[in-house]
Length: 195
Image (cartoon, rainbow, N blue to C red; front, top):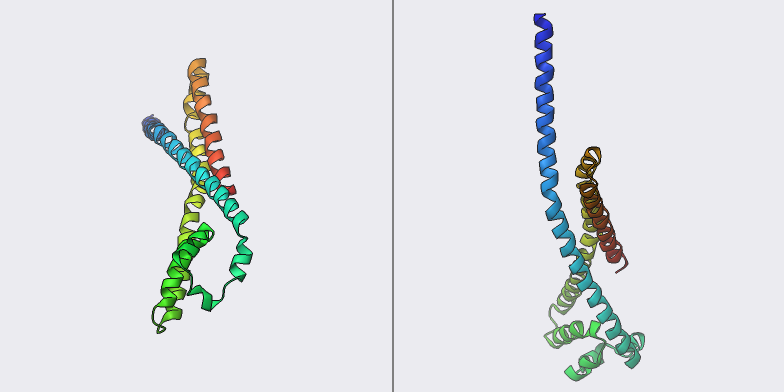
């Protein structure tokens, strides 16, 4: 009997520990629901702003392309006539070229010593700037669906608990949260992927 009593007490202690761990994880999971939802809203607003910038740039480039074909523009200059660009001529260039050409003309007007290195540095810094702008989209591609999945799974525990208790109101509100966070997370990821 004494051995069975110890075994029984050990099982009860293990069950208490398991219940404690389940309760801790449940509280942590529930506590993460609101931050996940807030982050999804922030990412969604950020995506809307990004889409607005993309559409604006598209129409600006389309307008610039109608004025001057970018390929013809690139073929129209050589190293000699780059130096003769005035700020007004640079202003008429497609907007994606303007900042780069201002800096390029300034570099070419400086002394020749180390010119190639400075121009290479200019090219690399422009490339890094473009890559950084894409990093924000890459972040949205990954984080949006991940937060959507978290927003789906977190309320499923309380929803299933409500189902077992017959509380249909709590069940439906948790299911609505689960599906809407999924949709928003996937929308963020898809929109960022196609930008």
